[in-house]
Amino acid sequence: MAKQMVVSGDYPMAKTFVGKKPKRNMYALLISIMASMTSVLLGYDTGVMSGATIYIKKDLKISDVQIEILVGTINIYSLLGSAMAGRTSDWLGRRITIIFASVIFFVGAIVMGFASNYAILMLGRFVAGLGVGYALMIAPVYAAEVAPASSRGFLTSFPEVFINFGVLLGYLSNYAFAKFSLKLGWRLMLGVGAVPSIFLGLAVFVMPESPRWLVMQGRLGDAKKVLDRTSDSPEEAHHARDIKEAAGIPEHCHDDVVKVQKGDNGGGGVWRDLLVHPTRPVLHILIAAIGLQFLQQASGIDAVVMYSPRIYEKAGITSDSKKLLATIAVGVCKTMFILVTTFFVDKVGRRVCSSSKSRGLAWQRSLFTLATGLTVIDQYGVDKFKWLVGVCVGATYTASRFLDGDGAHRLGI
Image (tube, rainbow, N blue to C red):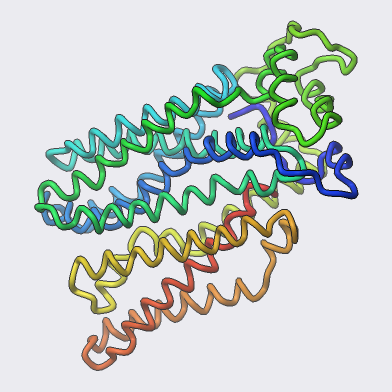
């Protein structure tokens, strides 16, 4: 686990910005976008698999249970990758970890693209899942560590934005390659996922290392150079007191390179501080972070994203191309409304974005409507209730709009 706590609330340095809001730092914006693009890997893998499974099942002659295992195990693999990424990012740095994420996902996508049977496909899924886990961990960490205080909520929302953008790209890939032959189409859908990872790996070469990691390594001079470029003001650039304190470096030390005593490389101290003896502020942060993440997953959005074509099939849409086309609209809704939330998160606050009662009622009604409509169609057939097809399709769009419209604020609690 990475030895840092990413909290984008009111840092002491934020006091610098009382009064006139500073001009947005375009350099910090650019490198945050580059790092956050790593999250495209998760979104693409999730979105493309929803449509690819239609053709995988036909070509490899596998069962629904095998499809469910293929789709669902990504969460287990990415959990393992996230745990490994924390150690890697502390040991080798954030930039190298981003490269690791890109390389691992590249290998996984290639293996899936050339899979000749279910076992090889699962192997590629496992490797790609590790890359997804690396990307999912490192993107928000890097974005938060280079973001100036005045726009930290905005910049740390980018990983979530790019996850949704990746989902949309996956849906578009499904539709584009569905026109190819059965054996080639789904392999192209999965294999093309290697292309974004190449560009992401190359982008790292123009990105600086995280100033926090540099300070933790005792490289104060290098950290200062990065802070000078990513901060909104000279006062903020010199305000590295909290980072020095975390690294055990005296506040008055201004040497370019200092020796830092290495602590627990396994991250056990962090786990103790979080779970065994947390302070009251840390406990509040922990409850809020876990609660928001749990509610986001428990809401059911993953089921809508991963099984949209199957949902539309149950609703009575039989044409594969029409199912995939309808699925693209889900990706468009998700991307549009998470962008709206991203631009408002710093203006109205994280709490307002996360506690909107109307949004909660909207997604509950959407999923209830979807479940009811599919049940009626399944019991009585689509011919008697053709109008329910439109209702079910509309419910998926509404659910995507409100469920992931809330997602952008989660990384900037």
